[in-house]
Length: 274
Image 1 (cartoon, rainbow, N blue to C red):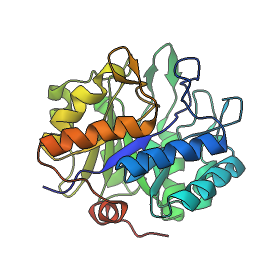
Image 2: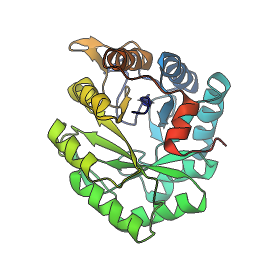
Image 3: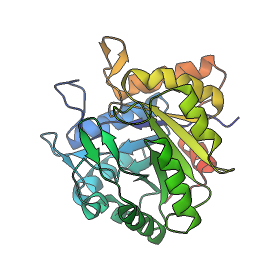
Image 4: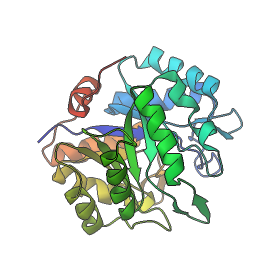
C-alpha cells in the first residue's frame, strides 16, 4: 500500500472568521496556515484565496501573490489551486489560476445542490475547463460531489474532452444536498474508477475524521482543512489547519500507514515538479 497523501484545504471560499477566528484571509494568514499544514505532514495544499476582508476571489494576481509567498516558506509543497471558486462565478473567472501553470488544479465534475445554492458545472463548462488543462499540461484533481459525477467525467475522458489516465479523484462526501458520507457510498465510487487511478476522500463537517479512517484502511488519500471542517473534535474549534492534519497523521500511524512527502506524492500521482 502506498504512503498516505494528506491534502490540506486551508480556507475555502465560504467559511468565515465568525465561525472560526483562525480561518485565513490575508496573504500572511494563508501562508501561516499552509505552513502549519505542511509542517504537520500535508504533502498538498488545496488553495482558495480571499481578499483581506474575506471576500472569495479567483483573481490571477491574488493567486500569484499567495502562491509565491507559500513557496517561499514551503518550497517543495504541491499546490492545487481551486477552479471551483465560489458559487455564482463564471467559468472564465474561475479559470484564472490555471494561467499560472500549476502542477495540478481542481476540475468539478457536475452541477449539484450546495446547501441552499446551486453549484453550476455544466458539461459545456467542463469541456472548457478540460481543454484549458490539456493545453496548459495541468493534471486535474476531479472533484466528485455526487455518484453520477464519476460516470460523467469518465465518459468525458473517454471522448478526450478532459485529461485521461492516470486520473486523480477527490470524492467530496457529506455536502448538504449531495452524496452522503458513508463507507458504502465511498466503496461504490472507489470500485468504479479506472485501474491505475489514485483517489482522495473528503468528509465534510462531522464526517471529516469518520471518513478519513476507512479511507486510510482502503488505501486512499485524505483531505482535511478549514474549508471542509472547522473542528478538531465535537465542540472544539481547531486552532490551525496543522492541528487537523496532525490528527490524520496520528490516525494513519495507528493504522499502520506511513505519510507521503511532497516528492513521494508526486511519484504516486505521476507529477513532475515545475
